Length: 205
Image (cartoon, rainbow, N blue to C red):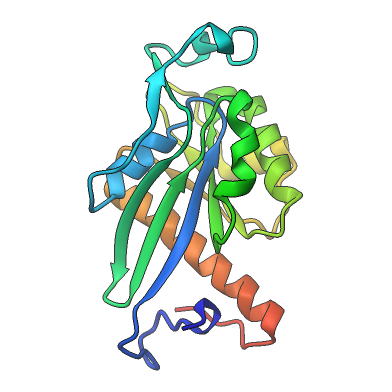
């Protein structure tokens, strides 16, 4: 069944189950592995490894106190969003030396969530540039860390020059309900893009 025809209202819903691939992306230490683990209904597959000297001078672990491991391939999880909609979550590696894998990870995805750590706003430029140059719908999720300065969403949008048509949500990657709202936003945004591209009525919910 075509994801572009998926009807979240249920009015025209068939019994056929739709599965969709969602990418969870972002820079080093922004909470991608935490987000997948918070929402996945299966034991998440992670490829965490101890950080080594190979990342010295590339990624600054001092910006993420207490972080000793990093994702070297991807994170994988699954969540049933409705009785006929299953999302498969693929988290990208954060260290820039592994970014060559992103092109393969996003293949076949319907949308993405780009996590941003508001303590390190400038680190978001590279991940955002990556998705700006790909024809993949994405939303920006501002991950709230304890002790971080508070910024309004529109302040961050202006600072990062994020287009007005890109949805932005506040989130806590540790909290299941918060993560679920991020995924709902990704699905809705992806559906609107697909419907617009195929000439379908752009209505969701």
